[in-house]
Image (cartoon, rainbow, N blue to C red):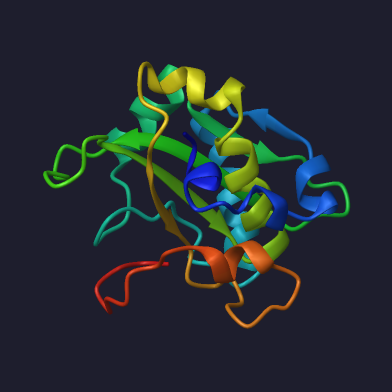
Amino acid sequence: QTLLGAINAEKLVCDEARTMKWSQIRTESELNTVLERVKAEGGIGLLPGFYDILSKEAVNEALSRGCVWKLDTKNNAAAVFSFIREEKIKSLRSKWVCSIATTSAVALDSAIWKACSDECLSYLGEDVAFALCFDGAVPVNDSTSSLFHALPLADDPCLLF
């Protein structure tokens, strides 16, 4: 069962988020271009991980596996997400993390929707579960995202959202 299915939140993803187009990123240069746009829009401009920013090695490994996607930005905020394996995770069965960089609540919803798609989950092998990390610049009081308010977020000041 996907994250959205597990929290019974598939119905909370708005039509706009469902129909946004995503494409794979193949190069570090292409990724850096998107992350620079995220930073220009008020984000951190890096891919967040658990308690830190994803390392260059982790990002390069995700790129080589084809596990990095960008939002096609025609009339959209910049957004990128990646799946990485986080070996520091000991308490969860799945060690996969979906790392999202954006400043838009709708783009965050869209990234989660896309990450839960069969296309993206096929990169995780037998797992369909993943932890979620995202840029703290996403407006938490944005009423455009019912999904955001349904996410079971940890109340931990050390976590990056």
